[in-house]
Structures are given as C-alpha cells and as structure tokens.
Amino acid sequence: MHGPKNSILKRWHALTITPARARRIWRHPYWREQGGYRDINCAHCPRFEAGRVSCGIAFGTPLRKCAASAIEAHLNDCAGMQVLEIGFGRWMLPRNLVRRSGGSWTGIDPGQPPENQAQLGRGGHGQAADIPFADDTFDMVFGIQTLEHWGQIHGGRQPSEYADCMAEVRRVMKPDGRVYLDSPQHFHGHEMFIMGDVARIRAVFDNAGWQDIVVERWRREYAPLEKYPPSAKVQREWPTEISSYSDAEVEEVRDKASVWLLTISARNPR
Ligand SMILES: C[S@@+](CC[C@H](N)C(=O)[O-])C[C@H]1O[C@@H](n2cnc3c(N)ncnc32)[C@H](O)[C@@H]1O
Image 1 (cartoon, rainbow, N blue to C red):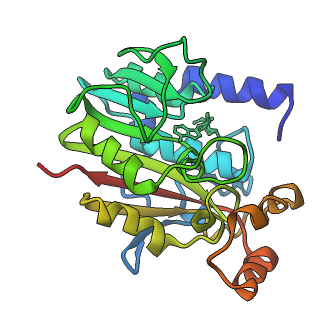
Image 2 (cartoon, rainbow, N blue to C red; image 1 turned 180 degrees about the vertical axis):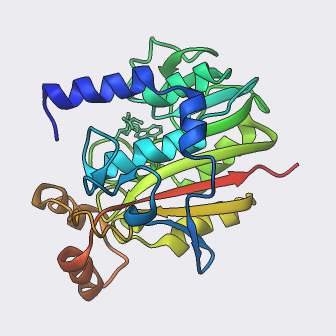
C-alpha cells in the first residue's frame, strides 16, 4: 500500500480526476440513511467494482480510498468560492479539485515553517486554533484527516480545545459557508476518534452552533471487502490518549474494530 507504485497512482489520480468526472460518479445519493447518519457501505459505494470485488480507487489503504472518494464527492463544485484547507500536508487531490472546479485554494498547516506566512491563494503556516485570516473570509473550510490531531496529546505539539478550533473556523467563514472535515475512527488522534464516539464528535459542532449537520459513515460496513483493523503500531499510542473510557470499552475496540471514515459537514448560520 506504500511505496513508489502507490505514490505514482496517488499522484496520477490527483492529476487526472476532473470535477466533471467526480460530479458524474457522485451525482446520485450515494448513501443509505440509517438512524440519522448517511452510511456508505462498500457494497453500495459508487467506487465499488463488483466484477473485481475491489475499490475503484487504485492507491492507498482502505481508509485512504474512502478519503479520496469522499473528497471527490464533496469538493467537486467550488466555482467562485474562497476555500481554506486546514492541515493540508502534501496531498494535491483536494486543492486540485477546488482549483479546477473554479475555486481559490488557500492552505494552512503547522508543519509549514513559520517564515512561510499564510497568504490567500497559497499554502502557509497556521493552525486550527489560531487561523491567520480576517473574519468572514472563506465560503468553505475543509480538512482531510486532520481534525483528529487538533486535540491530540501524543506527538509533541500542544493540544488545542476543539471548541476554540471550531470558533476560529466560524470566525473566518462567511455566513452560510460550509465546513467539511473527515477523520478516521478507531485509528489514532484524540480519544473520541480512537473510540469512534460519534455522538461526542458531533457535539463539538452542535455546541459551536453549526447548522444542517450531515454525518457520513464510510466503510463502517466493509463487506465484501476486507476488514481494516488498527495496526499494533497505531495501538501503542492509544494509552497516551485514552483516559475517559473504561478498560472494557477500549478492549472491545482493540479486539473488534475495523477502521472507518467519518465525515462531517455543516453550515455556518447567518
Ligand atoms: C495525517 S496528516 C494529513 C495531511 C493531508 N490533509 C492529507 O490528507 O494527506 C495531518 C495533518 O494535520 C496537520 N495538523 C495537526 N494538528 C493541526 C492543527 N492543530 N491545526 C491544523 N493542522 C494540524 C498536520 O501538520 C498534518 O499535515
């Protein structure tokens, strides 16, 4: 799943997927409503290739395939928008789709050197709890596999409060703008993501006053594709993060869980 061939396939996908193609793939409702959630089970996902019994995204772990699919579904129509990506890292797919569909992409990431100052239209230094842009700047703010790290204890950086981060996101967003964030469940990061505590994650958005909250659960049901258990390496970090769940709850996740992708999108009210 890693290695040069995977990198080439990932880059090729980011270079060649067009917004029009993404809109075609994801044009119909691609989820099933289940208890207030939108479930994208592998067997019914538009990216599932029944003949080969595999995912049509050719690169990456099962989690990455879901992230790519969800990006195609959510970021294919940004015409005329100012769009901010938080924690942009190195994956070109989201910014390419934003730009090709007519949006203006800006990125911030604490991994960028501080001298690379944040500026509209490019990537620079910044973090979710202190976004270096003026109020009401963006029509859309998104982040790919970054939300779970904002409040993370393990790994050196000072953890942020989720309430502070979401207040910052709202501050830089225009009224009626949309936020879109994805995060793996049962993988790593803040304890609520490791435990897959969707009610607690959603409460971060409810408590910050977001409206029209839509929660998608990608690959929670993975059959007929393979299970994706959290690796032993990832699980070694868990004790640093987990303090508010019982040993029995943690054991249950450790033994039975398959990693899946949660996406949350919501509207900034007027
Ligand atoms: C797993 S990487 C994902 C990078 C990229 N979005 C991708 O999908 O390939 C997580 C990213 O989140 C960034 N990050 C961590 N804490 C952050 C914070 N508090 N605010 C903004 N970004 C953060 C990291 O620097 C890193 O680039």
